Length: 595
Ligand code: F6R
Image 1 (cartoon, rainbow, N blue to C red):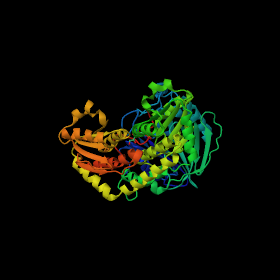
Image 2 (image 1 turned 120 degrees about the vertical axis):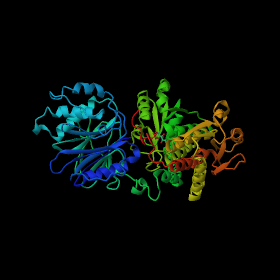
Image 3 (image 1 turned 90 degrees about the vertical axis):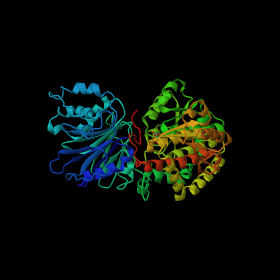
Image 4 (image 1 turned 180 degrees about the vertical axis):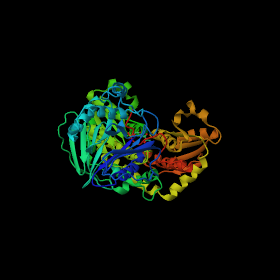
């Protein structure tokens, strides 16, 4: 969701630098953008903002050593230039991620009370109200009282009134430097030698520095040039932060020779599956012990991560004889009454920032539950809330559609199921051979073969997918992949459920993906074919009922991991053949930080 990037330093082209950084955050999904610069000559803060994509924007800004920018994914108010951030009221300019839940009451209060004159709000956003609240406080001060210390105090006061999750950046005319505060939305500080950055994700500044400080919830930072001062957002007390050197490499966050991030990340699965299981046994044993101690365990996750958790439900049942409940995070409130201090909640999340998951974890913690988390971002809010965190080590995933993170999560959960039954070494053995066969599979010829299949079905508006056992959640995940990037209506079913309704949808030529080649699934495929379906088998062996066959290696219990890969490639090519950008599907955001 919304991206934030700011710099304060010696640069005189800070505006241009912020524009470049925002382009690196495009993957988060957005519909409009804006940049504020503190002009060198007059000290005034100038704002440029537009609706639409930032990728092709080339523009210059006034000379400046301080600038902040934002890519907006609309929540309050439509996609318009006036709703785009930054927002300026009086001396205060602000960008904001998250939702100010009680903004309407404050908006009413402010109109008419702004130092005697009513604030004329120019947008429909909750963000502008925050700027109004700060500005109202500043107008009560004499000029010589407006210092960085005083502004920090005002930010603390205003943030105390905000209900909801947020990350905000504030620039004030007459006070050098940039202020940032967070509660529930990520902000990372990049420490260059002579400049300091603030961003919602590391790729924005990775080409300049890999030394970072993670801003925690209820912390405020004031940056100015190479300096960053941290304090507690509630008490104002100074906070000491540790410099962390991140291992991400610039190339990992760039497309390289690939046309899109999505296909790059699909091919990275040659390495990422093996990397995901590269955990010391003691961490896996610790996670397994947590599960042993539980009386009731719940997977909570959203979207693709939820389908991964569904696959893991099968792994745990088959390998460890353990039943784990799987609930989409947004549905978990109906089951919270069963959560107590003996419960383990297992959060699966690529970003580690998904609002629905975070909320369940916060409430679960209050009920005494323990948290086990699998995320791809070690500094994420979910990772930091966990009693035990297992990073999946997939490296930055920039395409909106999750691919390498999903298979890395599955690999790690598969291994955890083995750890749960004291067979880590055997689990590793199965996964290493799965990783090796996926490595052999992923080559340009294989991709070409799938592109040809995509061409055969590209004209169809409906597509169905069936699978059984752990391939049933993969049928659901296949549908998500195809829907989100190609906009083709795709739906997944448990193979055995076909006859109970969905088979009525099959017409002559309807493409159906059949995941697996077990006897029962093959006979379901035969039923589909008898009604005219065009069958694409995804399996280790070729069956006569298949019109097209996408081979996958035989991976024992880890079949779900291998089976989803050709479908990811198919979804990618369906999108490309339809002239769409698979990296940035419409209406979607990479990290869903609002409910
Ligand atoms: C689809 C996709 C989404 C995410 C979901 C949860 O390809 O990526 O469905 O899986 O929004 O996101 P995370 O894993 O960041 O919690």
